[in-house]
Length: 339
Image 1 (cartoon, rainbow, N blue to C red):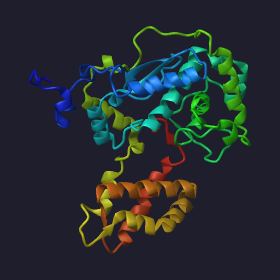
Image 2: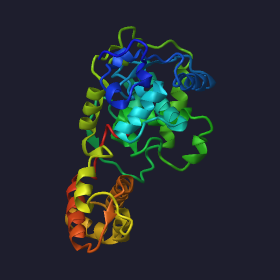
Image 3: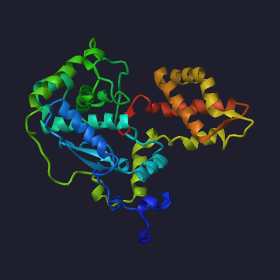
Image 4: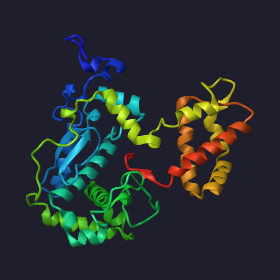
């Protein structure tokens, strides 16, 4: 896209900014608003006497390339203008708040150090976490109250794969002030935390077994796609887990903008929560907890869209029950891309 020589991409309106290629943004971590968080991660590793500092780079999402000790950070976090665009396009910025950013950095650091020292090859690692070679599925089921896993990222992410289990356990162990010995004192997962504590003491002052000097995968510096193409692809991958995925269906049920004389659509959802939960679980066999959480998400979207619920409600309730029943086929698994 051609723009006036004096016009910076930071000053472009959204529709024009979306046509800019990602590599042409010229983004880098040094000097950006993500740099202090990378520095903080280094300080936390130093406090644990870990000499290895996984290289960080800007990517299209939070990631650690398979068996490569590097940390990919979403490029949108490098500039306030891109954070604003991310929120416009995706309704949220993953890692946009300081605490959330550090949680994700610690998680990805767990992957990076696992790969740097090939910890997954150790017999005790396999005994505690499982087989590293297990297939990575696009979705996973979990037990929300299990005490065999730490609680760190949302959706009980530690239960999605042995590699994620280790990364989550490492993240809890690394977090300053986590008091993991007390918090997980009576939990079976304490053995995993103690293992992380022991193994990091063993390898902390050693040189990594694996290093990488090539171009990191999915690097923003090499992406030729436009921001528009990036977000189109991102929405398609997220599918039904994308916050705006059900907006059209909700609009069909509740009509357009809310008149002053009508009540909020979210109020109808919450008022009939028990009825909806019972009806859907009766026919689908899903847990009431999952359906209840789904209704919460739909109610929040109704508020965000300003949708109204006008009397009579009978047809709307039939439509809601059918809609939630259809959605419920996805509620027993979690999309791995939704973190």
